[in-house]
Length: 331
Image 1 (cartoon, rainbow, N blue to C red):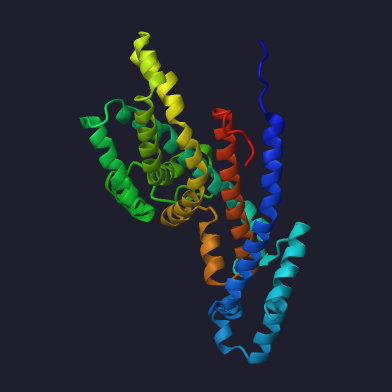
Image 2: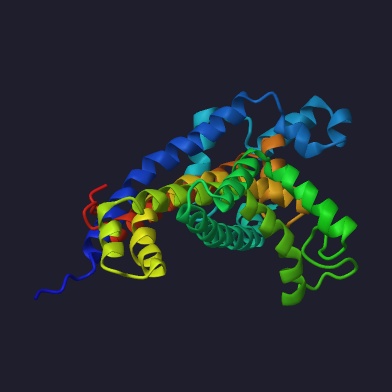
């Protein structure tokens, strides 16, 4: 009997193809950022100068415009940033007065921590609730779970965040309202980080939870009606074995495709949640870069978000190919 080896080579080829296709996508995205920023009514020079720009002479403003490089044509500005970025130089953030690599390096890890915790929690809890609801579709538990899922689906993340702050921080006082550390200290200990990340992670997870609940419920419910699962029941297997080893495996296949599609919503939700809870991620930097037309920082953050979406889609396709060998890795 021949043992089938893991298709690592096929997975590597698929990853390579996706990486090549990502290059023109990222180029187009960065150019689009500079084009939109150039057409924006916001003046980056006045945003950089602040109140001093109101009384500065036109000559000083022109000199500042030249120093920032925003007096160049659109193509030249984009090409200068792109060639520098290929060498690792993402430029300097005019609004935060620091190199872009430093701004992203200081904030990205906290955003990744928040998103990872929320995503894992949404997948685990959503799968459990979806399976429980699918066991008896139309029953009391199913109606309760789906009603809550549809309600959360319609609730904006920032509203959930404000509600959580009011309940858990202001009324009950069991969790901090925001930030990374307790008031009066700048030392971020593991205990403080755990307490402060709990509430934003729960809120972000709740904003992603409905899709996993509904997808798992539909997938497992349909799988329970398929002939292989009925055959397993007819062979006298326990209901738990039928549910977890037969129906759940088949029902989770559509959920794998959901992983990639949820990445953009996860990023958007994280920006809102970070703003509500003053979490030191990339949300504040993104908002400042957008409102002040900070070309280097805005382009870098957009590339980062685009790369995360492409990576999420690749991950979901790889997982689907591993779970269902009939699909393969030809995409």
